[in-house]
Amino acid sequence: MNITLMTFPGSDKERLAEAFEIRREVFIEGQGIAEAIEIDGLDPEAVHFLIKCDGKAVGTCRVREVENGIWKLERFSIRKPYRGMKLGTRLLEFVESQARNKGIYRIIMNAQLSASGFYLKAGYIKDSEEFEEAGIIHIKMYKDLTI
Image (cartoon, rainbow, N blue to C red; front, side, top):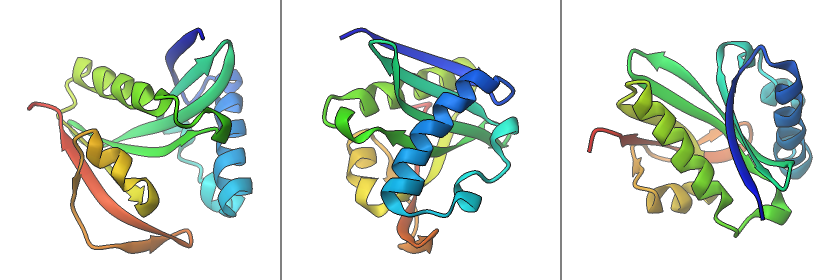
């Protein structure tokens, strides 16, 4: 299995189309999230990530610098047939390494409650009570990268 990790700007239409395909499959079709919520207009200002397996885009996420030195991780998704293969862990570690390289000291997110165990294992800390977003229960989480 040949794994490729990449980052790209929101202006890269070809790679963004690959990311949208994954997000459509995972969030819109898989979880019933409205397209207007999923495709929210913030992608042009974001930095995007892809993980490819044997040339096929299988996972994606985006980050936005919401404060100086703080990235917000959003739209983290792995296609269902590729879950359980540690690809999510590899993608998350890649995001964190890129963040450190750019002087980012903290990553925050609104994690789906069902995925919070994955993030806890990766060192993220719960930072809120449960709340509803897009019809799904979430929890705020963060990780300091300076530790």
